[in-house]
Structure formats: C-alpha cells, structure tokens
Image (cartoon, rainbow, N blue to C red; front, side, top):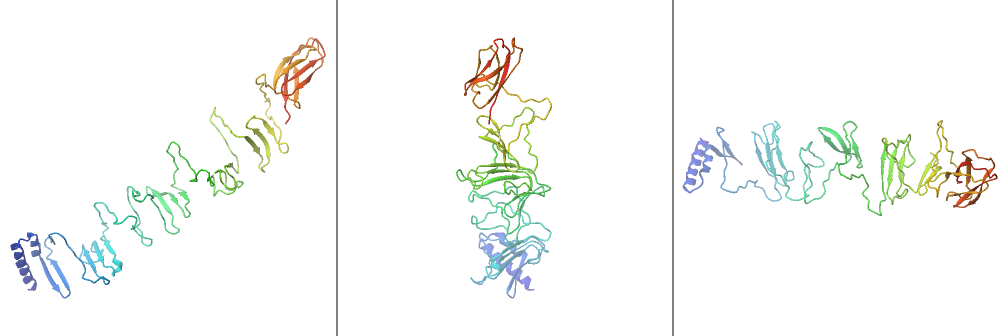
Length: 394
C-alpha cells in the first residue's frame, strides 16, 4: 500500500517537473521505488528493466559526516551485497577516519579484472607508488617500461635481500643479486652481446682518476694477481690504481694458448718483453728497441734445438752492419771486412769454404771498434773463399 502511494506521488512530482520544463529523463524514477527505512533511504527497482539515475550536470555523492570524524563510506556493488567478491565487483570510498581514506576497487570472484580505457596518470610527479613494501603485485604485463621526460632515471629495486630477476618467455635468464652482482641463470641464461661499432666493457672513472680495475675470471671472484686457485683470469688496472697502476695480467693455473689462423701473426709491442719463471724470476728478455734476446745472468738458460736437423740461422743483413758474411783471402795482404757489428770484446769466427792454392795459417786481426776487422794469412798462395760470423758477448 505504502509503495503504491509512493509511486503515485512520484508520478505527481514528475508531472510537476515536466510542467516546469525539466528534462523527461527524470521519468526513469517512475520505474523505481523510493522509501525510508528508519535512517536508511532505499531506492529500489522492480528488476524488470534497466534503471537510471540522471542529473542535469554535476553530481555530488558523499557521506554526511563532519571534518575530523569522516568515518563514513560510500559503497557501490555490482552484485547484491557490499564488499563481496562472491557477488561481483565493488568500489568502496572511505573518509579519512575510516581506514585512512582508502579507496578499494575489487573485481568479482570470476576473475574478470579491472579494465581501463585510456591513460592512467598520477596527480603529482614522482610522488605516488604502484604497490607497496608490504603488498606487491604478482606480475606487471606491459609492452614498454620507460622513464618519464621529467625524471631522467629509471630505477629497478628489490626490497631487503630480494633479487631483481629478468625473465624471457616465462623463464629466468639474468638477475641482479644482493650487492648488485649481475648473475646469469645457470639453465636459461644467454650471452652478453655488444652490437655497437665500438662496444666497450669499462669502469666509469674519469681521466687522471682511473683508480679502479676490471677483472674477467674463469671461476670465482678476482683476488690477488698470483691466485690461480679458481682458474685463469684477465686483470686490467687503470693508470691511477693503487697497487698495480696501468698494469695488465693474463694469468692461468694451466696452459695459456695464443693462437691465430693460418697465416696470422702474434705481435708484442713493449719496451722490454720479459720471460719469467713461475717463481717470478727473469729468464730471458727481448729489447723492444734493438730486438736483442738476452739470457738473464743468474736464471737464464740455454737455447736448445731438440729436433734433429734444425738449425740456428743468422741473417747476414746489410753489409754495413752485418754480423755474418763471406770474403776471399788475398795472400799475405790483409782482407778488411767493414761492418759496425765488429766490436772489441766480441768473438769473430771464420772458416774457409774453398781449397786454396797454397794452404797456410790465417787469423783475425786489427779489430776497429764498430768499424771493421782484418783477416791475415802467412802464404801468398792463400786465395780461398771464407765465411765469417760474429758472436756478441752479453
């Protein structure tokens, strides 16, 4: 009876509204029932058709509470119960004194999700978060993650001892462990590929302050330069590094191979190339300016030709500086050999390479330091050819 009277009253109000020029959209109220249950105002639909609530322009819906005591809520539910995902999606808007003003938006239990058409932007830059330290999203699906034009840096962070992992096709490939170590997954990790013309792996130091170093190891951490317990390593230090400034170390617990393809060369550029024993003692050096190979006076060894038929070849070079060559005896007249290789203190050898008309004794004489030496003979008939070479003393 009460609802029937209320509908009649609503129709009466509608008629007045139409007479006053109000939009006919207000006619939707005729299909609904408005009634009061104590402190609750109920707007009910008969459920037979779609119901609408329409206003001419602006709408304000709020709980009638006082400032400092805003403990009310506004609830909108798609199902027949408030805050029940089992009945459908819902929204709860709370005052500041009701759970600190939290807005709850929940999907229904069927998992339909929350669909957004258009961009979602915060009201202030670099102020608000997505998720929190205690409540985090499981997965974020996106095509791109970019830093804004306002904030230059893009930061990836894990809280506490958690890691930052990179997944590809659903499997972990790389990650940042505690302490910032970039770690490859043992099963699915891939390569590090540099595609620029001059890709560089380097320290971020500045010129004249290159106090750090880069280490590439075959096992474990890079420790002291003489530690091979975890395998081979390559250590490159900056010029201002404290203990080994500007030095490079290629060290191994086993064999070190330097290999080129057929026809390739391995070149060493240095002031001195120093070959040392495992104990660090110098054995041989190569002078980077003269090319001289010198055995260490204490620890140096000999040159051993172990293969049968191998020889030690000496290039005679140009005549003016040759350390080996040929000549012809001229009887008792001394034969002068001009070469800068002839120096006092060196050993000069020669041997006849043909039969003379008259055999006699011959010898080296008159060594002019850095200029020449003579070969003298006793017999005027000594006309054989000879070969000579000079052995330099260290």
